[in-house]
Length: 111
Length: 116
Image (cartoon, rainbow over all chains, first blue to last red; front, top):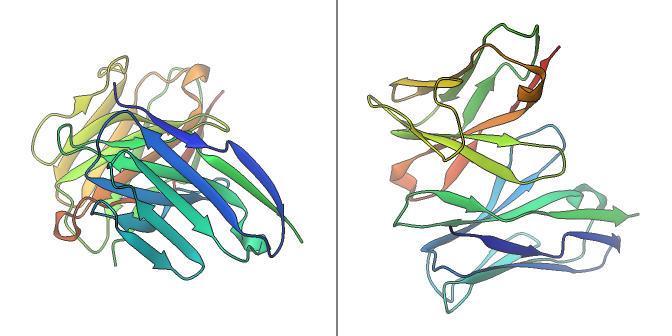
């Protein structure tokens, strides 16, 4: 089945540092989504990418849809303590109509 | 816009009883809703896809008689965990897709189910 490999699994950084995480897949996706989940809450959509090569920003967040349509990355610049949480990538396949999630990246920010 | 409300947020039930979880799209019509289960420190596992007016499509390994899904309207889908057992304790999350916005999916707040 379709799988997403998300890395790194966890990160512990200093406030103010930039962060980068990525997802790769053996399959092509037509949409890449990035979500953030706080403990005990549902995931919140951060950025949606619809075209190969697309680069989209949302405040301090920037994400790109890989040219091959099999990967995506998310960058967070100048991290702050409220960036703490679990970040998930998700790929949507038009073949199955399903949203496939990566394993998540747990981010911890030290003030 | 694109708000999905899930209720209840927490529920504790006795083993052998059934529990119903509701998922509502508040400001859009959702022809498709999805139900996920999430174990601690793990990713979201798709359980089933719920389509308005038709039977849900379950993922492999998910018992349809155990997890009853009803998508009776364009704004409401329900998940009923029947004859719950302690191993059913988990975090259940629904999501809904607003086709007018493309393939983005918006999530409810999740329901923490504890079966004692």
